[in-house]
Amino acid sequence: MKNRLKRKIERLRRQLVMLVEEKGSFSNEEVICLSQRLDRHIFVAQGYQFARKFRSTRISPIHRPS
View 1 (spheres, rainbow, N blue to C red):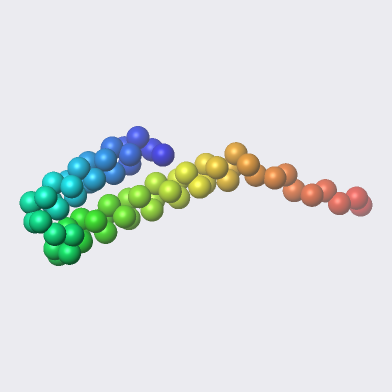
View 2: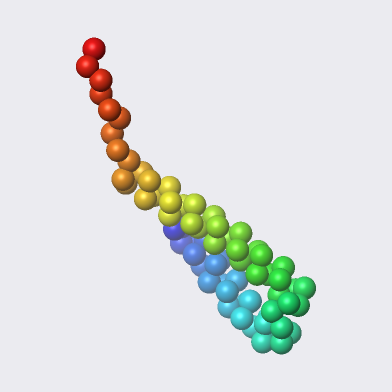
């Protein structure tokens, strides 16, 4: 995962925890918006991890005799 993205995710997580404590509810509109924003960043990070794993485990193509 890219370091910048990882830092962003960690920052958003901390913000989300503080916001939930401040608002006192997971169903608060601001909490939901921030949670969804964090979800999008996590989704992107998972895409990077999948792509890296896929590249490292790629199977070479089957060669058929001519």
